[in-house]
Amino acid sequence: MLMVGDIGGTKTSLAIYSGEGGPREPVAEATYPSGRYSGLDVLVRDFLSGADHRVSRACFGVAGPVVEGRATITNLPWALDEADLQMALGIPSVRLLNDLTAIACAVPFLSDEELHPLNVGDPTPGGALAVIAPGTGLGEAFLTWDGSRYRPHPSEGGHASFAPVSLVHDELLHYLFGRFEHVSSERVCSGSGIPNIYAYLRHSGRVTEPAWLAQEIADAPDPTPVIVQAALDESRPSELCFATLQTFVSILGAEAGNLALKVLATGGVYLGGGIPPRLVRLLEAPGFLEAFRGKGRMAHLLDRVPVHVILNPRAALLGVACVGFGLIGD
Image 1 (cartoon, rainbow, N blue to C red):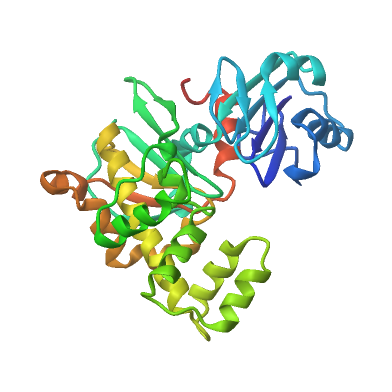
Image 2: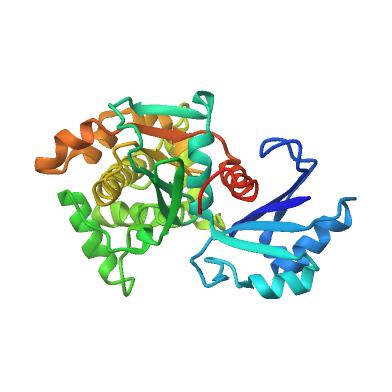
């Protein structure tokens, strides 16, 4: 029996598979709020206590870099070690991989129904595939073809420096210089980054913040859902929140184009994470692809790169299962 998990700062999803059903047919599955547990071992024991299955292997996708079998979860005070987890859980084989690597592992196995195309492009057979996923943070990964199958590669590109491509982006960067030691792409291209864009636009005076919105933002433990909902509310759309998401989308497009150039993703770019599926209408507007293609002499190359939104919210879990079943290289 194989146990797999998608370990995030907000929630953790676990599933158990038999050797017969394949990576899409778990025999048991559950999701837990990560913050309620002191560590992954405690959470897994809770899961296994309600599942009548003897697990012999486990593979976990974790939100953070994995180095020599160890990982620290970004946005969660958990330190993970493969050897320690083997002993604590009594599972002979435990493997950790980065959560974006997990999503990347799912990409070759996603169906057309699980993808929303933003740019059809002209993919190169066997060309590299890039994944960029704004969720709580900003994750990036990519896959390369080895002649017989795709192999995933982790990245912490979301923590590389934010590169402005417009006057608004430049002013945003200077606004954030006084608030953070380092302004990474994640500071402006993630769920945690959306309030930073909002605060800059409010401070700049470009758009006025109405009193009702100011109160809702002040009362919210996390302003991001409020901003997204107010921007997409057809009955009472907020100009400030809509401008925030438009800026976010242009930053995402520019960073996706950067990633495509860096790994030469002629096979395609895939937008994962929890935010892109909610913003498909905005991503279909001209701003995203204009920012994606806006790379001067390389614009013609990026015009040929397919771009898709991953619609499957369980893509990371699917990718970990594909690794556990040996369906993709490592």
